[in-house]
Image (cartoon, rainbow, N blue to C red; front, side, top):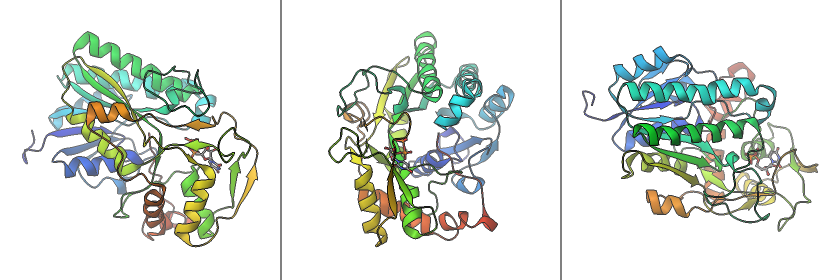
Length: 350
Ligand code: UDP
């Protein structure tokens, strides 16, 4: 415990998109988030609710010093490389950071007697393996990652599960579906460089400061022909981490939990929601499919409810888009970052 008697939680990657929102949620729940981040893609401005220690996961001594200095009681592990396309070009680097980096973290946790971990995993562990096109995904579904990025998330999950059995670590892997939206304060939000995600691109197109949107395919086997995804508000995602941290689980337990709303929304529905929120049509055209895009990725969210008492509360498309738009319009943050004279580092999710 630190001086203020708030249990300190190490948040690796806490300067990134989901990490920063989770740091805020931890603060609000009475924890002290201690951020460990190399700022390679996260942003110093997003660290507002606890101290920042600049360091790389691959540097075991730095991790060890950070944990010892702050009497860490638990770890939430976001830090990692996330760009699927880049993972196909640099699989070695992805394994080094996402898998070897996680081994480092677990080793230091064991050395210092820190027995609780929440790990950022991804719906990318499922791929398209063995389900019908519109089936929701349960945690026990076949795992068939379609990229080296997904491979590293699944490998890290397996390794964490084995260390739970071997050493009595207690861990929850949260498999994120499509993180979206921003904190309603407008202070923190999504900002990738380059931006590739649908909602910020659709907003930028509607605001007239991005390129027109290309819809990647309208010939999928879905109700309106465009892809279905499960968009989850980043505030709901952050709450899932706090719930996972606090869940009453025995020593040695390992659990993997989907973090999604359970609702599939199509690209066309997103375009309509953004048009409504901004008040002008989103300029867009229909393009070819993007390689590797499955028609539908929608969570079965029951396990999160049963195990963590967590459920999505802010993940209607309207609420996600309204909060994302507020962030994009904030001149100091979203809008500011689009000004080349004021370009800053992105807040990258894991
Ligand atoms: N998408 C699109 N145009 C874009 C970016 C994304 O049509 O410029 C579609 C993409 O095919 C997918 C959905 O929007 O069906 C969400 O894509 P995103 O990259 O945001 O997240 P992903 O599901 O790939 O993690």
